[in-house]
Length: 523
Image 1 (cartoon, rainbow, N blue to C red):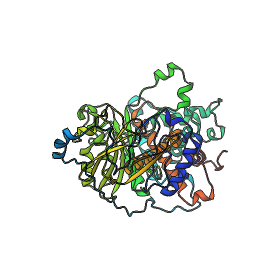
Image 2 (tube, rainbow, N blue to C red):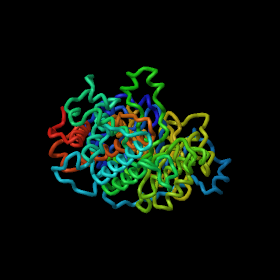
Image 3 (cartoon, one colour):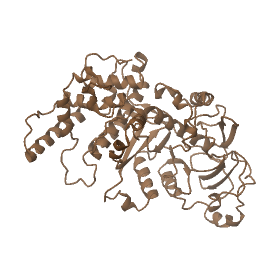
Image 4 (cartoon, rainbow, N blue to C red):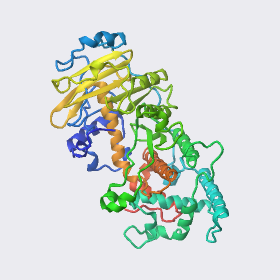
């Protein structure tokens, strides 16, 4: 979501220290993300001022644009809005700013269930993937194997799968998220990724048989109308488990998590191997707690097909992204959540619709990617002469504020969650503090936290890449479940007994799924 990928990779120890100070003032646990490393320090959003009068933090990249302090007069570099002012005033937009209190939020976020200090990695994972879900996979896999053999001939090597074998099967595939091994079959090889202790739990031949027949839903029902019918019941179950196990903080982010190819594999594979790999036929969107990184809700959109959610049916991407946002926020109504959005989702129509449901928003605007319907044209054009860094212009319509802020480029934000007359500040690595409206500071801080999640957790997505789309979706969902399980573990008493890193937690979970006696993680 954060822009400016080049600057995002620069290392900045001082910036990271400023961010940590801000996290403490925000009561955000930086430790939730596990072992910290230098790869996170260069994120353009990390550095913020602990002294700012905000409950949120922010920073920006030198190559990026961000806003300035409200309450100040419009800078001389901004366009003179006298001409279109009458039209904009008739549409409800005014340069007269009103203070407004933030949405009240009295809920206490966090885990809904206190796990005992003795809780294992398996206990946390089974909050989301319990035995009854696994037993359903066992039944569906056996049903599919039976029907498959009735149609294509019997398979003498096949024996019906058991619950213990299904757990082991999941464990083997999950192990690729820790080893970053592209082929799960490498476990049984004699190469670099071989693992004799894991290989002894099940033969390669047996694993391949289960892999051949594995199904979550064996057959299409008469009600199934979309291409994800083979995995949708599991996604629904997972969604319910996420909501039951965790209450998010007030601030959340809608975005597409980083689930691209493992960079180590891409750097080492040949061009021919890259050409053979098919592009994903779906996009995965999430609603994510910006204080902990816990993914509250998942939405999967198929890029192809003729269903009501297809791009052909929706005509354009803004319409698609609005539909995604509505789906992700369906259970958020009436809770005074503050949702941060990127340019593809941000729109006046959507934000006004959400406000009626007591969902408040703060989003980055782009004239190229956003639906700018209903916004004042004078705020969407750049002046010929750039204003000074930190200068801004704001117009209001009801509770909605449209902010144009300059910081080596123009940044525009739309929000009904923050007062336009409250000031924030962003710490810049070279130029010190850059003033900005509170909404901009909050946006930068919470988006930076999600970038930190991507930095830390995207490396633990399952590396196994099946050819079938529904299986790709399934393993991505399992990856998210394991990451969420680790976040709950880090917030529990069990973490204070044995402080496992994310990699160690994954290794322990794999061994428990395989039923191995030696539960100690590898160091």
